[in-house]
Amino acid sequence: MSASAVLSVQDLTVGYGAREVVHGVSFEIAEGETLALVGESGSGKSTTAHAILGLLPAGGRVDGGSVRLGELEIAGWSDRALRGIRGPEIGLVPQDPVTSLDPVRPIGAQVEEILRLHGHRDRRAHRARVIELLDRVGIDDPALRAQQYPHELSGGMRQRVLIATAIALRPRLLIADEPTSALDATVQRRVLDLLDELREEEGTSILLVTHDLGVAADRAQRIVVLKDGRIVEQGASGRVLEAPTDAYTRQLLADAPAFTTGFRRPEAPPFLRDAAAVAAEKPYAIVAQNLVKEFRVAGRERFCAVDDVSFRVRKGTTHALVGESGSGKTTTARLVTRFLQPDHGTIEVDGVDVTDASRERLRALRRRIQLVYQNPFASLDPRQRVVDIVAEPLQSFRVGSSAERRERALALLDRVSLPQDLAQRRPSELSGGQRQRVAIARALAIDPEIVVLDEAVSALDVTVQARILELLASLQSELGLTYLFISHDLAVVRRISHTVSVMRHGRIVEEGATEELFHDPQHDYTRELLAAVPGRTEVPA
Image (cartoon, rainbow, N blue to C red; front, top):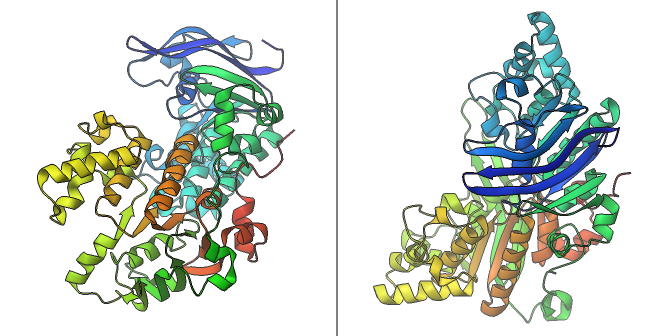
């Protein structure tokens, strides 16, 4: 162990039952350094981080190896002993603030609890320290926020509360386990900026657990790449990113949306490259004009979620609606698919006005437009087998016999590159990427012309995400599909879309061809979104 190491992990082995899941992992973190543990879901990165803290779930155990905090060997310590260093010596920023914060207690009380648990008795001093911490992590009006409940705060604010709790006792080491994976790009950037400030000003060392090499590139001095519980590569960030030695690291780089290698969005169709061909080719699949949608909020004025939104999508192309949470993009998509009725404006599909379509016409519209949701686990019936899930739209529209529907479902599974032996499984038995492929197969079952994809890849690891984007591009090429792609991630949008509308506060602030918008953004908000894409900044020294 080097003299300056705050944390040294040597030959760490972790198991569940009879199965070993982390195999001889070794790395060190120096004082004031950020080290990133990078890998896909199941790579062992979170298990490694939780093993260091003694927070493995039931059935998990450390089978061997050394974990040294400074000069102190903590591997094998009891949970009671480890509780003494969680907080004062090692702080944890968990991934999901929704499940990590108590919904029925004010956030100030939750931050204050760690001070009380570690022997601080002066309640007045507690409250002052809580306000100081909330202010330190950039929460506006901290005295007011301390009295509020988690649901009254945005996702970014809730994540800042977790950081405030983690740094309350000024630990030497901060473990941040996917701290921004559920956040919009601009909020993610602000949270990661905050962690950088803490590192620089307090000398805090950070173990950053992430599946996103773009985030690691921006924020870490060194990177450790994990695959199947083993380290396949580690070194200085610049070296790993510029000259990776392992094939898996090269694949992660190729698949990371922010980097310039790997899968490319298909070349723009001729009618987007040649202005003279626009009028002659490819009529519009979707025309939205002056859409407005308001909602009533208890005790408040009506809220305008979509405010005079207009855009057009040519047949066979992908148009992206981009913006942060609350920008109105999902509400716009639900208006287009007519799951919501607009208060004002019109929607045309293939030149037919469907704004005030009757129930029968809406049912016919459902055959032409299908929706793929963000969370495939929530949108797939957990009681059904995969083959029945895919065949369900065919049954709903009374297409074919039972045998014909089954045959069609199996053919669709093959088309989205799922082996047929998965057909008899249930969603819980599939990976996230496999579930999303099932959702896409189901959307294609009744031969739609338009597919609306609402954050359909945002919950996936970058490698799985890249395979799904490749699949969508190939299906579009083969079937002539039109996509309306909803996303907060401009790096992903660049890979798949031909045209883009950028939304903010319910309005479109900029639109145009994708490459033009990326190369010459006109609106300050678009430039802010682009600046927040991980991997676009220099590797830190």
